[in-house]
Length: 480
Image 1 (cartoon, rainbow, N blue to C red):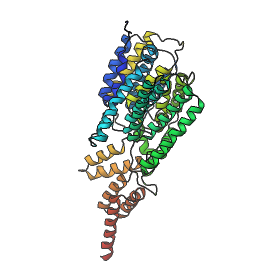
Image 2: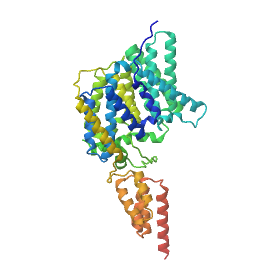
Image 3: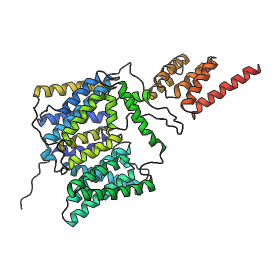
Image 4: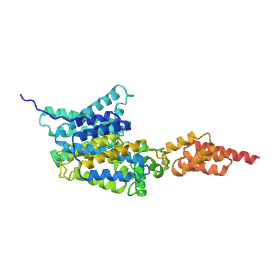
């Protein structure tokens, strides 16, 4: 009996990077970047002239015009590493296609076991947090595994194989429902519908999706799967609108990759909209399309979408599971925050590389390749170490500066006045400024500032207390 030989690749270990907090930690990411780059060079992978390379280069150009050049340079470096992952999986697709999905499924089962431990034995044990603090990160992985097993169940010929693959599909489907991720549900709907259409035909796909939508509707009513009862979920379109306002303010080069948390403080909606209070702060637009548009402008978004079309959609193959997985993951990212995690970007570009049909593109000279490595590693180090003194502070940073300055009331008053203009939807700074105006005897100005804070957020206790103190002062003065 002759044993079948497999040419296993170290890149098959890539899914397990999720267990290192999804590489959200800069040290973890930089360590991976160095190791993978050395491996890339060792394997002598060639650069290609194509839209993905153009996209990465445009991001680096945008960094020069960013509100935070250092942060944006580091983020452009991240996309350089993602581009290397794409190239590696594209060039090694024949070796990796047979095993990469299995490796991803194995990761999914590890995460599934952690979810079972939480659900059945230790509710306080949030095992899924090993990937990241947001449940949607883990749900994105589970959704991909769910689609993979559904695809395998349609392909299975024997009853035993079909039962095994269907069991895997149900396991991951239930895991996604338990995590209550609307984006992951959308990913499953899209991925399984495409699989059904290409493997079983139009009629089967329509029947399947109708049945699945029925189940989803039942779960939405019973367990609030779509979070209709979560008031804050209705604010997401407002976050998207804030991203659009930022894009219109910086249409060509964007505000800079990685700067959304700061521009959101300028363009975000008021804390109180007349029906509910939303004390909000976010580093992400909750849509990768809008995140990219805000951070790098309309040109970057166009190049990105063109590159995605050329790699996945132009020669879309419904019988290539990786094409389906790439589209499903991106569908979730369009409405969710998952690509805030570097690992999921890495996974996305790996799936694109496995999806794309190899095309005859002009290779780039090794001189340019080594220069690119040198350039992006230098700017990444610059991004980690350089501190921009003119950086626009986030609301949290500004609040800390004021807190640290409490020994000097004049600095606090001046700081509050400056930050109030930068963050017009924060009630925090008008109250601080009002407090010091009140102590300085500027009662009317203090009243104006306190009323401004109360208008932004009617439920802000500090503003109401301050207004009462000013009112009592008025009473005392009138009695005299």
